Image (tube, rainbow, N blue to C red):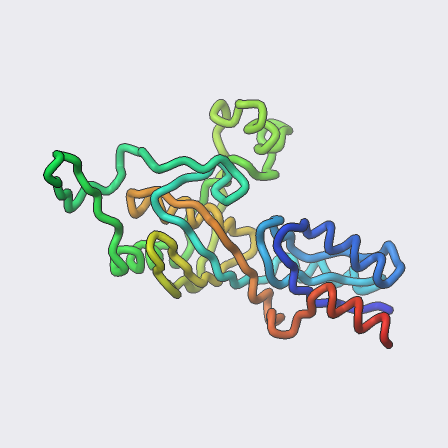
Length: 236
């Protein structure tokens, strides 16, 4: 069997775990994927089986669409839920308007929906993105996450890359959680967008959830879960 598979990856496993499961289902080692998803992320993962693996290289560079949720008021060492989470205490934290209660404590207001929409809109087009500290990008022959784990992440200049955001829009605002949809060029770090969104709003933010819904013209609606795939193969 030589074909491309559209898989709806669940949270909690790696993209390589998905490849291993498909290898067992089809009883072949010739399985690869186009575009990794982090373990906490869900959504569209394109796999190739046997001769179809040759098609994967062309798919890696296609535009992608995601639905992402960022939590305001906190930061993460990894810019996502897998890192150490701390309350944002940066010097640029929002202080307008400031209200003082009867005990003399100040209350910092949260960004408004209009401010969030304006900040999201500022990502449109082509811009320079700083690579997350915990990433596989190499500096001096060492992967960034290796340096970070040794406490050396701040000793090197993080790589920057040019990214393109085709469309980005706010989907919902629930308390301090912002859910947005973004269509972007290949190689864009969505967790870096969440990080930068927090910086632009002056309150900090990190990515709490991510779902890939489209790669090129391939849509999540046409994808199967691993359980559905196994059932289909075993009953055919």
